Image (cartoon, rainbow, N blue to C red; front, side, top):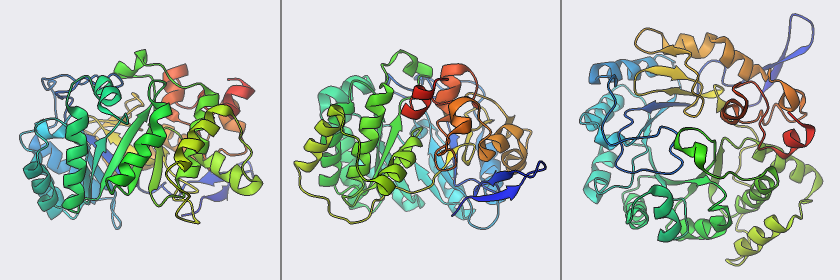
Length: 381
């Protein structure tokens, strides 16, 4: 779906987002309760549910709101915390199926995520399940997830999800302590038969405030590695890393020109498992941003541009989700790419736009520039 330009009141071209009418994804944080204590958890999840969670009936109304976006309804991502800790979890899934709303599930890899649970999720009609894998072995992954045995359960759940046809994807949060393991993680997920790898570029919020992030140069290393990996038959998506589209665009137009040692090391390890298997990259030339194709509903009904952008723009208990998404001025500015600093003047802002979550985390403004981007950091914020 192509981005279009319309004439502004001043006669200048104005960006019109392909996602102005409806999002692609609606994330519902069903609970902040979770049995794990991940070092980077944006929600700072705890074992007991917080007061004020949406009730079952309120959850049903939220699903009805998603259905009211019309044809080609957004997909709901049931997330948390750990959504399995909601006692009405499968009741909600059943309601979504009856409402004709496509959904996916993002559970934690605790002992609750058994093969029988996976089977029930599949039977409920889930289109996909996402499992987090932040290390190539138990040592790294379990230390990040704050509990022993999580790595083994994750791998076991991935195998089970593949066997059940649950279309599993692996999510990996990229940080200083694990980014050099990315090639080995990639080889592992390919060996498991996983067809989608979604990578989250760390945003320092929640418990993640204390986690060491990558430098802009290391981010560029990772992006170039991911472009290479996208030719191996696995769909690669990046969250809070829209600059990957700038890297892909410049490489396709100018050829590979990033020869930093960090990237070359990642590339060498990638190639150790063989040559690319596809002539086409699995990366999309365009994509979403927080508030532009994505909207987030918190455990208490709060509406935000994304899960990592703690700016309330409404609440589903009193506001129409469709109206908020289409008419909220902050979201409209994001979709028009009305950012300040380097992101606002960047030649790649239509295909990229920078992470709105990272700009908020760094500068307290979701419309400022993204300091993880090499272009933005070089230009200064």
